[in-house]
Amino acid sequence: MLLSGCDSKLAVLNPKGPVAKTQANTIIFSILMMAFVLIVVYILYIIMLTKYRASKTSDDYEPPHIEGNKWLELTWTAIPVIIVAILSVVTVQTTYAVEKVPAGYEDQKPLVIYASSSDWKWHFSYPEEGIETVNYVNIPTNRPVEFRLYSYGPITSFWVPQLGGQKYAMTDMITKLNLVAEHEGSYLGKNANFSGKGFAKMEFEVQAQSPGDYTKWVNDVKQTAPKLTEQEFNTLLKTDFVGRKSYSSTHLGFAPPPEGDMAGHQHGGDSKTEKDSGSENMDHMNHDMSGMDMSGSSSMEHGH
Image (cartoon, rainbow, N blue to C red; front, side, top):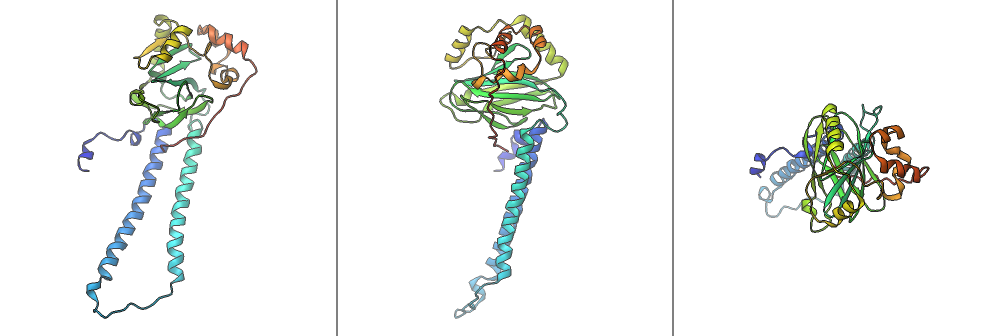
C-alpha cells in the first residue's frame, strides 16, 4: 500500500484532453462521495463499539424493547437515496457530455479516423488524408478527432486513458468516440477488453502533434510510404504480430467498414479534397456507395 505511492501518476487521473478531464473529475467526485460515506460509517462504528460495549453494564442488564423510531428509519433510508441520486445525475450528465464533441470544439470540423482491430493489431485509416498506419496514430492538437471503431475479429476495446474512456469495437457495426488532445505528447493506447492470446500486446501510441507538425507528417507519409494493396492488407490480417507500418493509401476502398459507413460521410471532406489527397480508392467507393448511410453507433462507454 505504501509502495503504491512511489508509482507514477495514474493515467486516468492525468488527463490531457477535455473528455478525459470530464471523466477524471467524475471519478474523483465519486471517490470523495464514497470516502465520506465510509468515514461516517467508521465513526459511527467506533462510537457504537465504545459507548454500548458490554463491559460498561452489569451482568443482569437487559436493554429496553424499542419498537422503532420513524425519524431514524426515514433518515437512514433517505441518505442513501440522496447519495445514489446525486451520483446518478453526475454520471448521466458525464455520459452525455463525453458522447458529443467536447464543449468549445463544436464549430470545428472533426478529423475522422477509422480505427479497426484485428488479431492482434490496430489499423488506423485516414480517409481525408488518404493514408493508413498500423499500431500507431498521429493526431493534431486542439482539434476534435472522431474515431470510428470496428473489428475484424473478436470484440475489442479502444482506450487511450489520458484522452478519454474506452469504447468497444465490433465486427458488424461502427461505434464512435470523440476525443481531443490539448497537449502535445505521446499517449499510450490499448485494447481494454480481453480478446484472446495476443490481447496483452495490443498496444499503440497516440502522438499528439501541433497542426504544423501533423501536416508535415502526413505529407511525409504520402511521399515515402508504399501503397496498401489488398494482398498486403490480407497478409496483415493473417499475421499475429507486426510492428509499426505506414501506407500512402487505405484499405477502406477494397475492405469498407461495416454497413457502408463510408458513404454518407464523404470521408470528412468534399470530393475535391479527396482527389487532391490522392485517395483514388476512396473516390471510387464513394461513387459505388453514394446515397447509403447505414452507420451504426453505440453509446456503450465505461471506464468513467
